[in-house]
Length: 440
Image 1 (cartoon, helix red, strand yellow):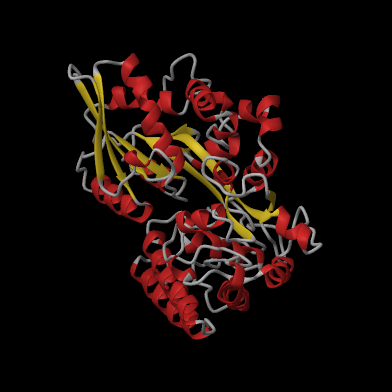
Image 2: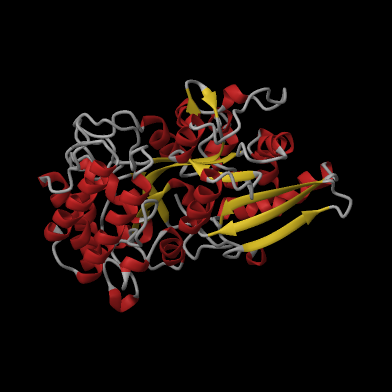
């Protein structure tokens, strides 16, 4: 649930269509993907694949996260067949697999080592034990903080901070006169943008999206407390215009040395410690995601994965490619080109059994713990009828999450308390759930 713009920038672009491969290629695979750092690296390294497979040409459709979701959802739901490989997540894979919109993934090449995939990640992408997508990387949410700024103020970040502690640190470290802001958080509207973070804040305050009868819970004290805390914290101690900032924007701010703290996807660890991209690569500490009344659901769990739509006419060639792009071989290629800490994180057990990787990667342990301890089946204190830490795996959630994300982003922009906005949003979500037949 994140995006990023690293070098080589020539490969980045919204709606960009690139081709790579031999003029003699007999098979063309169209790949829809998101414009994040790891995917950009995949495009750069795919030359190795086409050199090994001169009969295959790769065409890349690279899109911003929200736009990608709209394009892929429209294409697969109508059987459009525009794509042979889709970059989807833990939200889409099980739903689309149940609808038979995705090719079930079986008969792997002998070297793929499918049992090396982390169980919690594999489960996200499966239906009744059958895989419908292969994990490219997985992430939890963690806390990034500037060790030099903390040391200068005599502060110490706990391994497991609370949101109240984070607020206290932000207040002490916020210094706009020096272009240093106490905390950076996602404010841009989107179910995969601000609502990924806000959902974890709600979870850890004991809230939930729906009760056991699917009634929306946005007017409960837990939601009100969590959202007002988030709006107040980011409004007072965040950078200017936080409602416009998603993952990309906050990563840019952090790498420029402007954020004292940042709570976001663990996959950013490889970029904030990269000397070629970050101005503070040696001044970053890592801690678990903040918590409040419960640790349950305080860190999200997300996997970006590659899948083959049933509408593709190149299914075997597409399956061969996604095996390569999610293989140990690909991880080794990334390590050789970009350094071992740049290997796609969170997908394979062997990565975290690699002593060299663990020694060289300061965020490896906190990433591993975040992924292994997240429980999408029980994301908060109270029982829920859905699966998912930062989303509910129902078709209606994409629209619901986007709606609520816009409302909360608006509250953040206005700086007003969110009570009235949450009441209005709850009514709108309730109407959606009634129309869909969940409640009467």
